[in-house]
Length: 301
Image (cartoon, rainbow, N blue to C red):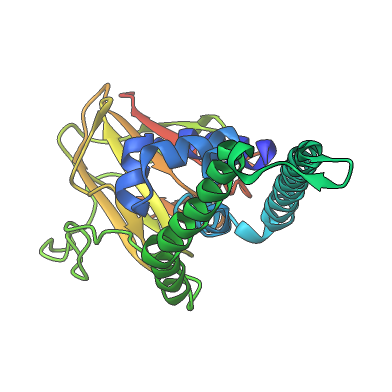
């Protein structure tokens, strides 16, 4: 479970989410998310049956494949169940030994086959207290299970029938309308050139000052994206999860020194263009399925 937790934490940090943000997305509390990332199953010992569902929700919210983690999660839970079972057996054995000791002590009340006078027999209040405590404990556990645990199990089973993330809030900025549909296509003033500095950095040249430059991304699958301009996160376009075949557009007025960074949640196969030029990803990152930051810098000739 430690490896599963480490994988979840690395992916969350890679895509730039805090525990508080993931809690808002998944409706799983921050302490529960922290325990998952630390692989701390003891935190869930009162409701261990929920752990697979929590891991599934969390993994899907971070764009990870839960099936790759299922065996590790099942093995960890099985080991915890085995440990708990051994502890129960040990406790039951200890209780049985204590009862036998008390019953053996009672035999001293019989002397040479003659019972002591009833008036002189002592009541074993400690054994009686133990029995009362056990009965009250069983009643309390039954009530807790019926009132709290059983409704939660029923509710959880109904929520995961379609194997989708439950509780992810709808992004109020995520609409079906293209935020750039009001723009009228106009021919580009100049022939802009894009040169690769390294796998993650590109220079844009050949533009005219204040010329409108279009950077667009066509998505081939559901991908989360965030855009930074001169190091500041922008809400145009908005940070959100874009769906398959969506096109995200960034329209800018060219100026020397302008810096645009695109933070992809998943880079593979997405098509990026600067004006009409398709940018070919460097082979070292072309199949990247995790978070990736690509930077474009405007440099005058």
